[in-house]
Each structure stands twice: as structure tokens, then as C-alpha cells.
Length: 274
Ligand code: 76R
Image 1 (spheres, rainbow, N blue to C red):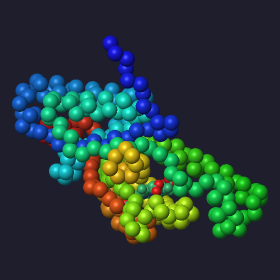
Image 2 (image 1 turned 135 degrees about the vertical axis):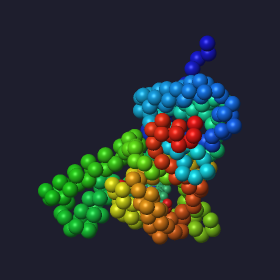
Image 3 (image 1 turned 30 degrees about the vertical axis):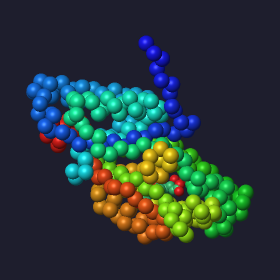
């Protein structure tokens, strides 16, 4: 036996794959009833195996329109593991039953625009709130902020995604066209714009769970945007509002949008007429 491939685990964060498939019902119909039952069992067992792998999550969803039928979002540290699971998922209902339609590779990442405790202290507590550095209130608020951010950073790098029913995925890049080149702006200008973006985003707290994963050098766009919601109107609202946000107005470029519904596997089988 050859050696197993050496792991490809990022220094921090996890790999993320969004996978979209079409069902080929003509291939599925070629299986007799017991083969179909076996295929569904195999598939269910594989999903369970993935979900019980350490630090690994697999979201399964039915896609709302014929852009695709079935979607997965796989989060796991090791790209070797992600790749192996992806190949097995593709085959698990039988050869050619699941046809890959679209896929996206990214990684969870921290943001260079996340407000640091120093920035919060200087800009918000001293600057806006007029608190004196070193005062009891200043220090208490700073500590509260640091705790909140630690929690938030943990979510960005090692998220635990809820089973909210609506899932929206789209790739996104920042424009690099003539004078509208995000990457030619200096850091302070970018940070100021992102601060406005974050303020808009925070209004959706509790209604939208957003996960921005980085894909520069890994896939065609620069980020994957995953939004989870309990109501599709919140997805429509946040994406609409972001379009008016100065960052998206000038620099946002978007790929195709996929809307899915998270549900347990047996529901998915029924939904997909398998
Ligand atoms: O530090 C933080 O993570 C919080 C501040 C924050 C950053 C740095 C933040 C907050 N985002 C950040 C970065 Mn966002 N976000 C999007 C989209 O459709 C569109 O127009 C844009 C798609 C949405 C809907 C959204 C929602 N964000 C980013 C980046 C990386 C930028 C870079 O590095 O250049 C992208 C591409 C991006 C895009 N963002 C929030 C939200 C929401 C809901 C929040 C508030 C999160 C919260 O505080 O709970």
C-alpha cells in the first residue's frame, strides 16, 4: 500500500467546498428498487460519516430552481479529506446519478478590516464616546469588546452553522477596473468603507448568519458569500441594502446566486423524487 497523501491543513481556518449537482433521473431509473434503496443507504451512511468526522460540517440542501437539484456545503480542515469526501459524495448514489454542475472552493479567514481593541478604544470609546483612557468605564467597555470580538473571530475561522432553512450562496469579487480598483485604495480608505459595510450588516443580526470565505487563488472569484436565514425576505433585503452600501455600489462584482433549502436527507430524497 502506498502512503496516504500528506494532509493539507491551513495554518488557521478550514477549507470550504460548495457543491451543486443535477440528478440524472434516466440513470436513477436504470437501478432496480433494491439497488435504489442500497444507494440511498450508502449515501445516508456517507453523510453520517462526514458529519461525525472531527471539525467537519456538511450542510445538505435542495436547490430551489433548476440551476441545480442538490447542494452541499462542506467545511473541514484538510483539503485531502474534503476532496476525498467530494469524490465519494459524487458517486454515492450510483455512477452518473449526481452530475456536478457548479462548485466553489474557499477557506474560512479572518478579515484585515476587523476592528482591533486598540482601534475601538481610540476611535469609539475615546473619540466618539469621550471616555478617558484608563477610566473604569473605558476599561470595562474595552474588555467587553475584546470578548465579543474573540467570539466573532472564532465564528469566522471555525463557524458552527445552524440548520436555518434558507441558504444563499454566491461568489463575489472586488472590482479592479480603471479608477475603480479596490486594491489600489490605501488601507485606511478600505477600512473606512468596510466599517460602513459592517454597520449595515450588523442590522441583520439574528436574522442573517453570514459567512464570508476567501477564495483568491483558490477559485474564480475572491470570496464565497454564504447567507443563512429563516425567511427568504431577509436574504432579499440584506443583498438589496448592500447594493446601496458604498463598497458594493462601486466595487461589488457578483457571480451566480444559488438559493437552497436545508433539510434532512430523507426529505431531500422525497423532494428530488429519488
Ligand atoms: O470583522 C468582521 O468580520 C465584521 C465586519 C465585517 C467584515 C470585515 C462584515 C460584516 N463583513 C466583512 C467583510 Mn460582510 N458581507 C458581504 C456580503 O452582496 C453584497 O453586496 C456583499 C455580500 C454580505 C451580504 C455581507 C454581510 N463582507 C466582508 C468581505 C471581505 C472584504 C475584504 O476582505 O475585502 C466581503 C466580500 C463581504 C461581503 N457582513 C458583515 C455582512 C453582515 C451581515 C455583517 C455583520 C456581521 C455581524 O456583525 O454579525
